[in-house]
Image 1 (tube, one colour):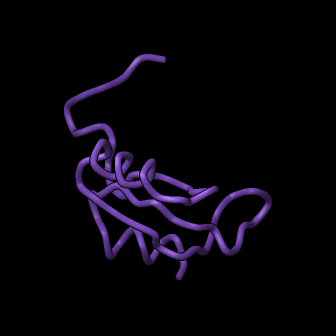
Image 2: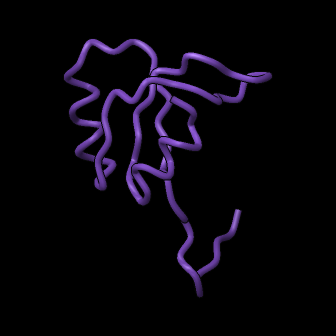
Length: 71
């Protein structure tokens, strides 16, 4: 499934994806392995699994409106 489709389907959740296709190193398609609104819960399950390689990302706005960040 395309990464964009996964983001739309699981909006505002953390996704763990096995990448099946990339374009110049950027994941564009993958198989959804797990998802959760809480990153810590997702990480706990991934650690217990035997998954070797996973692309984990948040499918939503990381910075809420009215907030900013400093690098």
